[in-house]
Image (cartoon, rainbow, N blue to C red; front, side, top):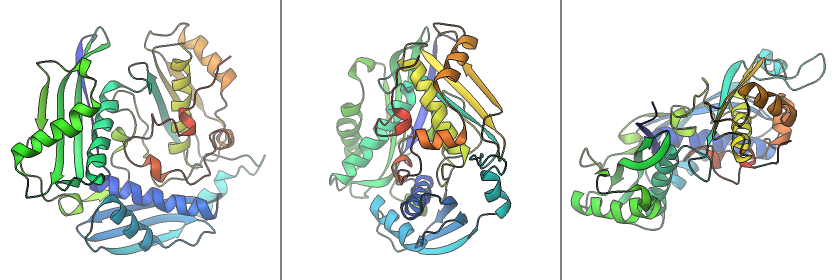
Length: 366
């Protein structure tokens, strides 16, 4: 289809799934802060006032899991008292030994899997317009609350439907914002507040017209939220974390995983490559796929698709990519500098698009 409407959603950091992502990545950051060689896969689940921390860790770091979980929840904006149960074991020696290739001492992939990276020229961040604007709305909701608005609570979801004409962004068809709120504000006042303080400040006015639909808290009252309204688990929002469904995704989540896990590091690298293809004007849209086998340093396959927008054929672009980028696991970790405690910042509002991240940098391709 060349003429269509495409929709993507985002969620705030107070959504219970995102609470768990932020806890997991805060734990990872603390491990890397003390021991950059940490191998971590520690996740979280939350329901009501109960948090379960569980997974595998191979690290020299001394981690107070309970304190990190409680501090993270408080930082997000929840004030209830939580109990925390921790069940963390040492990483399997079989998996750990596979990460170091015994034949040549190279870094091997921590697991098998497929990873995708995507970029397009619809926004200055080279992200698809639907997910970009959905993230901006969710982030603005959080800014409004943390700047002192007394009515907005931490949990919330946003959704943006973009109309395309001849595969190009034409207009915004529908905007949905659902936010947890104080019981003391009426739905009418809440809709006015969200329109004036959330939607209008972040949306491109040129994409809004008289037919754009605005659905603000369409279900009505949303006073009970967070873990008291729904359960949450690390890794359940991988479409929000990536491209909003516009680009394909691999099977694994990002949060909780150290960079030896290619589910995370290679997905970041695929985005890095795809973004640079578009930024260097070699294509208007680009998707890169890599696949790895556990314990092996180099990908078992690489694939590029520019959806007919490439300045050269996809086969030629793949050769250009191979000349400019090195998908070996150890190089990905070195080139993107992934052993630093940077991951809590990625856990909400998407892992892509923020120029502070190394995988969002632009380089000149030869």
